[in-house]
Image (cartoon, rainbow, N blue to C red; front, side, top):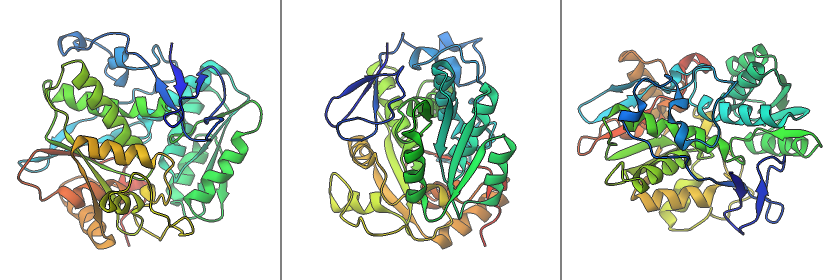
Length: 365
């Protein structure tokens, strides 16, 4: 049986509760979870063609909320750089991997309401999977969120709350609502079930590469949910002897909003003291997070992997989006950040996620 575990002070809680944070430090939960069994490439033959094929590694099974998420293509872009096309997920972003876990958990707990906050993609995914499960859902987004993303959230039947201010103000508004009795907070930051969904990104890569991983895995990092999921997967695969070495995790941030990169290169374990600093405008709205709650975990995961942080300018983001479009891939501005950062690498193999469809934001101005 999985239990919530606070990585800071060791506090535990049952996953059957609606407690969304550690009551001692108010930080996000991890999940104390033991895999049901050992995976092998041979055991995957004939299984369902979705992320649920890795059931031994997942904290939930037999979902009623699935939309067929997962199993996105891995396509070479250059001799050393490949792209995983997660913009082909049901709601057109990688956030479906974690959202299906949150919605499935909520469905089993039967709360009165579900609340989520997002810069757009996570909220869209939660709205879609709550619609699939027949649960009422309210999504909080910042006032600058792309109109196409808010349109998609409304289309799924969710109630939309547009919050004045930045992503952090939106999170605070949602957390206040989450404290109401009978509320399940479908937080892709605080709830670790989301991370166990995003780790399937790496399991699929491992399967498609015939039981191996590239030298490096690049991911865009705001709240770090894809990076931390990747760290979980590489640790699990290594512990089971399914890979010999863990790949380096290359974390990419927009130069305009790069608190984790600054902390990493300053050699600190947590964020630098700039608590009064607001997020600057950036085309990479999905990773414009000035104070990510899992900052210490993200920094530790990158260092442990032997990876690093890279930043990209607004000009590089514009250029990368057009370059990918010229190659046949129309990707949103956040989703091109990794290609902008490592697309010219030739000395080692690396996989980048194309993690959101271009229709969500349009071309960068």
